[in-house]
Amino acid sequence: MKSRVNVIKWPLRNVPARRVSTSAMRHQTSDGGLEIGPKSVKSCPVQGFRARSTHAAIDSSLFDLTPSIKSWEQVPGPRPLPFLGNTWRFTPYIGGYSVEHIDKVCLSLRAEYGDCVKVTGLLGRPDMLFVFDAGEVERVFRGEDAAPHRPSMPSLNYYKHTLRKDFFGAEENCAGVIAVHGESWSAFRTKVSRVALSAGAAAQYTVPVAEVADAFVQRVRDIRDKNLETPGDFLNEVHKWSLESLGLIALDTRLNCFDAPEDSESMRLIHAVQTFFLSVGELELRAPWWRLYPTKMFRQYVAALDTILSVTLRHVEKALKECEANNASKSLLQDLVTAAGPRVAAVAALDLFLVGIDTTSNAVASILYQLSQRPEVQERLYEEIHKVLQDRPMKPGDVNQMPYLKACVKEVMRMYPVVIGNGRQLTKDTVICGYNIPKGTQVIFQHYVMGNSEDYFHKASEFRPERWMTRSPSQKHHAFASLPFGYGKRMCLGRRFAELEIHTVICKMVQAFKMEYHHEPMDYHIHPMYTPNGPIRIKLMDR
Ligand code: HEM
Image (cartoon, rainbow, N blue to C red; front, side, top):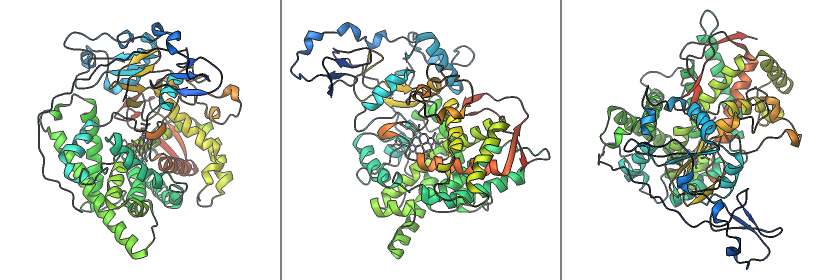
């Protein structure tokens, strides 16, 4: 099995025009369904409509509610200019919108236009629809078809399907899940989900993940400055922790990120992952010049992906040999090799690497930053952790005895979700918020805005972990207003691993230190995760 790393072609690509289609829409009630009888709920061929009827033969033309379905043209939103569309709004100084502050753009879009806002005329991108209504999010998610399409990473799409198609396309349905859609995504996801989402897949890593968290605690203890504060590049240290943890899970190996020799394979991988993250944000969020010619950044990006892929392949070969020698698998990677074959295992490991590192590290950095400003929350956490662990090492199931720890993590993810919205590219015309939204539109379910809205969370601007622990139905919030890991068939494949890593490292940090923050409050920005903007300088006092 060899990766082909040197054949790079640079076709000039045209930006495809989005097809705008409409279809006749007929019946709807205020909640998006048609109720013409008691009890049984039948799905209607047009997504977003339900016929509640025991009389299937009722002539629906009797209920012609056409006026209640508004057209795409009627969806409110900022007006595009001739030729410039809405792209000009992202021009620095004059435009008013900024990619780094899409969070604020979304807040103001909702304030100005309501729960459903379209932004059209974006150079190189399909039209977008922002949805801020949790009921609609639920309805659309629940009605998703078998292979939902998530608009993601066009540059990775190009890497997998054009530059390295010899590798990713060599076997049917073996391109992975990231930047892959339709039947190919569905077949691959089914093979990997069976293993990655099985009960116990994450739990088997409790002990080694805790060892990595211990190493991280020791590392931050060692690199504190004379004021006991974390250094300016603390986030980079958190990235290393995340990479070390994921190396364990996805590659079945300790990479020794905290002290790998400069000429080691681990260090090559660390540099490649860093290059990937530095470039992916720029390539995805800025004007896509790489589509026209191979910019320096794009070439570095491709080289980084090639390195990650070749290292991944080496580890898969090792796992394959171990499986053959022992006749049994003892890790996620070996399970994947056994269940789905070495190529699927390699591509899956690559995908986990591409999306599983900076999501988790930015979430942890954000949680630590938030906790460092709340000593009373830390004390309650410390007591809960101490009650469960009594100074013994962690074992599977411990975190289930720590509801406050879980609630704190959920609360930070509600207020500051690292991925601020869940995207879908509609695979068919769909009614959303009473408008007919055409196939091909990119819909963003904006859970950052909903999570911070009084409409969905009482005292939304306050940090209240207890809200996640209540059993009282009257205090429960809408389940679709905060979905930091997405939802449904395409929801985060690594959620269980991410939660294990996050809970473990936060647990260890709270056990080890009292944390304080003595600098100016930081704003959050998109980089490309939603993360505090500035050096995270936390004072860590040994307990
Ligand atoms: C705090 C950490 C994380 C957050 C907030 C997060 C969030 C997300 C979100 C929002 C999605 C899209 C879901 C959707 O479209 O419905 C996603 C997809 C995905 N995530 Fe995560 N993620 C995290 C960590 C991880 C980790 C650690 C891994 C790997 C071990 C991982 C692997 C994946 C994969 C493979 C997908 C694509 C699934 C597919 O398209 O079928 N994620 N994640």
